[in-house]
Length: 318
Length: 275
Image (cartoon, rainbow over all chains, first blue to last red; front, top):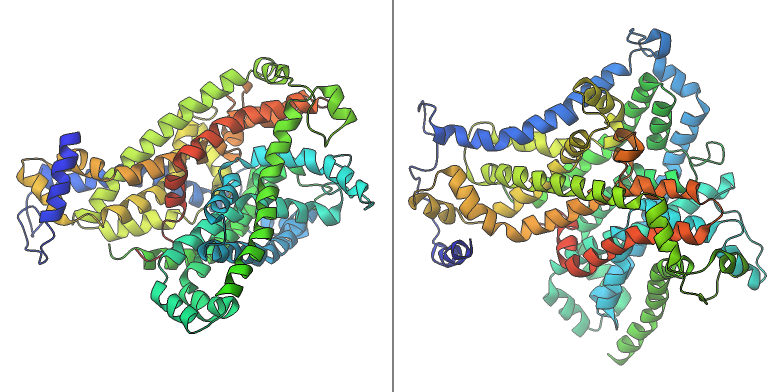
């Protein structure tokens, strides 16, 4: 193995000569027999395709199909848009849909916080390396762990309220009130994941034209001017990417926190589509859950289409 | 220039506050896990007076955590191994071999990234039940592999497209078949990317709750994260022991993070900038 790697390395150096001639190894011209050579590429891709078709694509189609059939005694029967109509009248579904809008309001907060902090780290404030490591740490922790820790901290009789009491601010039952439950969970989510957006920003900064920034600095641009005129325009693609990943992260990554912190409550105050679907499965209503899944799919699809565009631009050419 | 240096120091202050806000909850939890139950009830904020390791022992033994750890380790190792083998092979074919349908295959794989697991929960249960894999290790592993495969393939394909063609052709001249080139050249060359994806996927699998909760229904098949969330019901009025159980699962992750920080960030930032 190790000899392989070294020979490989010297080959990289020698082999830089441009101009690709077509070689016999370049696979098919036309109408060649199916040799092992020609089958090999398919054999390499096929397992991935099979796994994805069986466990992603087929379930997706099956689920869309389910959404037009009934639950319980109507199991398997075609009910048209019945499930979708039921959803519209369902209080928990309405809460989920409303909460999606609240979630979207929190996206810019995360992007802004991460963007600002990344800028400061990029400009090398004292201790920038340390901050980078610390801010990213919660990203690798499971939502279950984070939820467990914050459950204790945010409890009505917990340390946060106790600490607030010391400075004579009345405590709040953060997770127990309809008005504060979801925003609190979202703030914890931001606490846990802004480090992710931060490192993505920093990767973007690394591609920034350093000379341009130096020139601006020599011309006497202050920090604010550097940010507005050099950094933000140079980072438009990264900012776009962070917006998309943050939005998808918030819409499909909150289950763990909701499960440990609020269980969707109080009432349905902190329901989100993913939690609602999971609840319906537990209540043995798979068809209705499928209809709710289609709703979630539509939301994510719109955001995902943007993501694909960004990702494809990032891969040079394939 | 001088004012800029001052500005930097001024900015460093809120950044320090934030860093403390990031670490504090974890240190607080560690502090609580070392208190006795009585201490916690009397004083929640203060630094622990005792070093009550018994909490950890209780959580480990009474809650069957050893078994959950073993389950999760097996599931994580197998899932990650499968992910790496499948994705590096597929990435090699997509980036270096010309064959009919390669573009479509790549697009199909990319588009699978857009399907969140939440959307296919119901039919996934159905599919697994139909083939008899519900509530089994292979069933859970298959779903994890399918879940993280699209991004891993994307990452490996992007990485391999930076490897010069001359390299693989030299391998061919040495008398290797295509699988030989993959195993003897692409796997060693792809090591940094494979390590990155290995760590990242291991974290995803280790930390997951939703998929495990849905597929593993019997208590003996629980993963660590299901076990931890069940701890709360087990110790409703004994917070320190509960938190000790939580901290047991934090430890391995923090260790992995300290060792592999660079590889992890390389993985999560893939695709964010032009290559």
